[in-house]
Length: 105
Image (cartoon, rainbow, N blue to C red):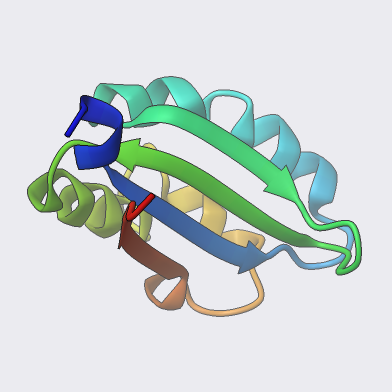
């Protein structure tokens, strides 16, 4: 298997409250650098076309340990890099959807 197939695909999904989109989008512009420092590769950030305010982050990590570290950091309100997200989402930060997948293709 090559490195891309061995990598764990990670999908995060959350809804931004109406009226906070601009603040959130400005904040997200620096998140890729922070994520790369945690070991994230191929970071993508997507906005749903049919569900206003719904955003997805999609990226790869090299191991389940890196996944767990990223998931923990992203879901912790006190994290100085990522905690700001809590003020703009529709549910508690600790409940942000975050899933890891193995590529079977």
